[in-house]
Length: 198
Image 1 (cartoon, rainbow, N blue to C red):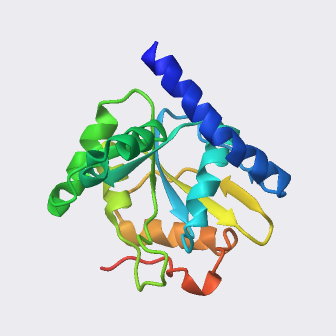
Image 2: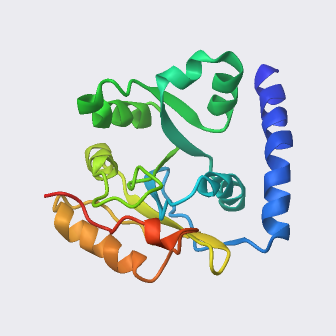
């Protein structure tokens, strides 16, 4: 009963986002891979508005996205409850060296799981992507799916799944080629180049 009530509340909270999103001309494109688990990278990430596009896109693609959020957020009862309902999972960010293992454990505990990660990690322009998403997918044995927002065309979509080979430079080059044709952030000059540190 509690779950049904929680699901109803979440629907009531998310319905306005979805309606406004569609009325403003946004749409989804592409197709989700036919796999139960994957890491979706959200690129480019240049604005707080990016988060608000995730909710209607999740409804469009009929998949529930999950994000890993520092456990301190969940100490606030109401905020913690809401964040959990929209897909937040608590992780211990102080154990940064063990973050990949924490994520892999969370993924392994679920039958179906879409982990959304913003590899740029900041809305401001950086020099490199963080590579955690890659090693999470590699260690969990699941694909990476490139997700994107294009504010010019008012489109949110997904590209083809990429199974990490272990050669991070070669795989990032594939993603770089993909993003050369897809994705245009709200503030394009703040997008981080598609590259990781060697």
